[in-house]
Image 1 (cartoon, one colour):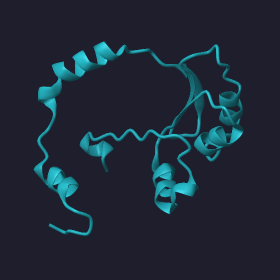
Image 2 (cartoon, rainbow, N blue to C red):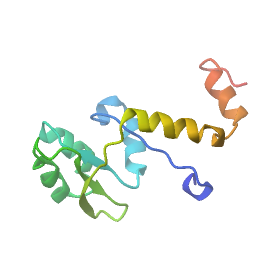
Image 3 (cartoon, helix red, strand yellow):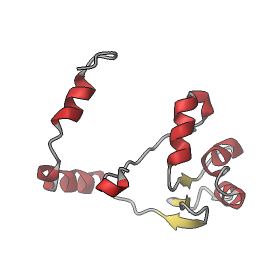
Image 4 (tube, helix red, strand yellow):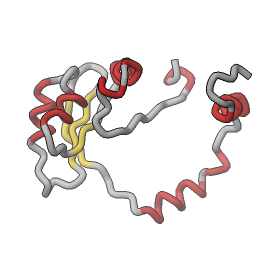
Length: 122
């Protein structure tokens, strides 16, 4: 529903697996695509890509240290591809964020929800 409203969520983490609880596993199952950069152990690639495409797991494990920025990306149809990310210097990211800061929507209900103490329904 979020995408239909133009709201897109980027979830990033290291080893986002069932050891974090059933909620994170349910969230991961709903993600339309995933990105796995170079990994140090097979378990991380398996956790990220294993339920989508076993071939993608092998390719992610084959990314070498010399291939900085290379990742395996999956799509909602289960296909995968190798991709290279573009390095954005910190100064450029800060400048872009400041340039577009005025476009940030005002969402008072969301702000109140985030500020409410846990268990408070107001």
